Amino acid sequence: MGGQRSDRVDLERGLGRLLTTGTYLTVVLVGLGVAGMVLGGRSPLEPGVPPFDPARLPADLAAGRAEGYLWLGIVVAISTPAARVAAALLGYAGRGERTMVAVSAAVLAVIALGVLLALGTG
Amino acid sequence: MEVTLVLAAGGVAAGLFGALLGLGGGILIVPLLTLGFGLPVREAVGVSLVCVIVTSGAAAGVYLQRHVANLRLGMVLELFSAIGALAGGFAAFLLPEPALAGLFALLLVYTAASMLRHGRRDVGEAPLADGALIPDPAMPVPPPAWQGTLSGPGYRVQRLGAGMAGSVGAGALSALLGVGGGIVKVPVMHLAMGVPLRVATATSNLMMGVTASASAIIYLFRGGIDPLVAGPTALGVFLGASIGSRTAGRVDARILRALFVLVLLYTAVEMARRALGLA
Image (cartoon, rainbow over all chains, first blue to last red):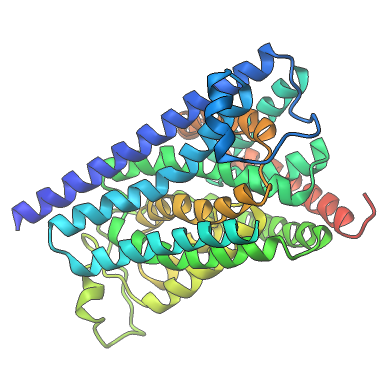
């Protein structure tokens, strides 16, 4: 019983750290992007900013372009909650909690469905 | 550079007021971007969703580490809020801009009315003793055994069906209008499900990340997020929310709330004018 509670506390603490780390990583990346915007004299309202293209991300980052850091920060932000669910799934699987494993997997499946539908209809 | 700073300052104000009044920043970011910077409502919603994820992530991380949020309940309900968000995210690209502006005006009026009726506690945080058992005379039959595993110390989760339905609605609202959806989830969890208010607020915050990211993915791949607008705004909101959460206890929220209700109502009128093509 005490071991179960300790497991729960450890899992929640670990997931909390994951969310905090993801958030701060987002803030750092977005901060670099905004610094790049300011230094490059770019306006947030300038027209013609290309939409998100994962294939362009490495080149934008390598060239130090503001968009690269901003897009990466946004992707990290959007991915962090899903990473929290994936980590919870692993935690529950390790404890043999089949119902919560199924719930976690279902949440991930809904997110994956969103990605597939968005890619298919975008 | 000036526009970047003004945008970031607007984000700081939205995050600060949101944190001081127990609201998410989303309710202010969309009007700020549409009425203040002339962005289309859909683009403002996409940016707002990113801000919601960032601010809720920081808060939820702390709530989990302090064991205030109910992780198991949150994960069950976020399955339904994510389904609602998926549907709402696609619906947002089908609805015309004036319809979105009109819906947002209604949300602003509802939020203002909630704040007037119940004050700060109804829309977000409030101290209700942990461990308070909520009596439920309307439910003589004990809940199924697995539902019992969703309960916490001193309270028993009830009417899970109502929570699931409310979560679908909150997810759709979040995706359509770029808000966290706490204005729906917190009352449903607290009043219908018997979850203490402090736990309901923390759990709602935890759910916001998955809910908002389920729809933000749609906005991301359909060109509904402008990174040059999202960057300064998200940074500002994060900074404002951080300051607000540290100073919330030292500020008399009553005057602030009255002022804020006026701002919400004025913004509702402006959004309604936009919906009717008058602005």
